[in-house]
Amino acid sequence: MPPLPRLRWYAVGFALLACGLRFAAPYSWGLLAEDAYPLPAFLVELLLPLALAVLLPFGGYHLVIRRYARPPATFTATPDGFVAPNAPQGGHRAIAAGFLLGSIPVTEAGPGGRVLVTDPVLLGMSAVLTAACLALAVWGLWHGPRVRLTPAGVEVRLPRTRRYGWDTLAPGGPPAPTPKQRELGLAVARPDGSYQMKIISFREAYVDGTFLAAAIRHYAEHPAHRAAIGTVAELHRLRDALGIADGLAEAQLLPGSTVEPGA
Image 1 (spheres, one colour):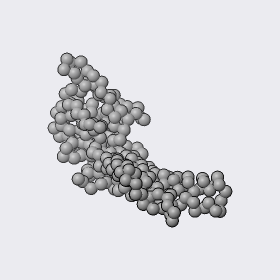
Image 2 (tube, helix red, strand yellow):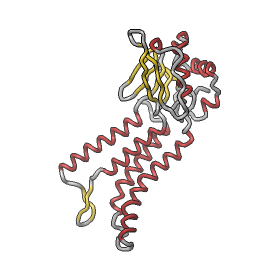
Image 3 (cartoon, rainbow, N blue to C red):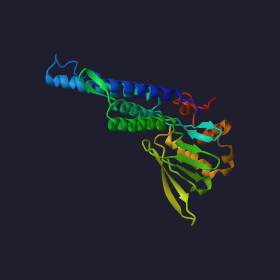
Image 4 (cartoon, one colour):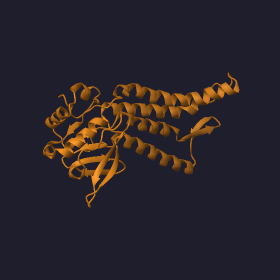
């Protein structure tokens, strides 16, 4: 398994922060009860720790990734093809998993303070919830690229991977999406010669939608260039053919990219 890119490690750190703050929240409840009115005490003691457990991790991660809000018009060249890596916004899923993990009851109020939970039913539920939170975090961080262009066609990873061969795609498509649209419509040939529209989502792929649509359209209409997909030289040629300037392609490249096009 390849090492996590730098931004994913940030997501792991903020997920641990969310888990720790949420786990510690119950220990602050009751500290101010003797010095505050009931309603202010409730708001401060209950809501403030929970708010900090949400705002600090999510806000901190947002500050880290805000420079990557605009996806680049390029791919990462790999031996398996051109890939659009996962968008850094996917790290929010891991942070949410950390918050939920810290919410799992492992302690309860006792006569002398908080004590470990001993109820076997509650412990079993906690174990199941812990496994679910860890699975959510791992899936969000280690899930492979959402979109991949290979010499054979287009691969889109959703709950299951869908593959569309180049020769099955209708010429002239897909059309460029609107600026906020994160879906493409692929016209895929049926056995009877008609075409069926397939909607593919690239919501969590870190690539400009107009560039992605143009690249798919280019290879659907130019089969001679498909064999070179995955090489840096072909990525340069594709960008030149589509009129993509280096600044637009490289301005928001993720740290830890496999191959930077300008290299």
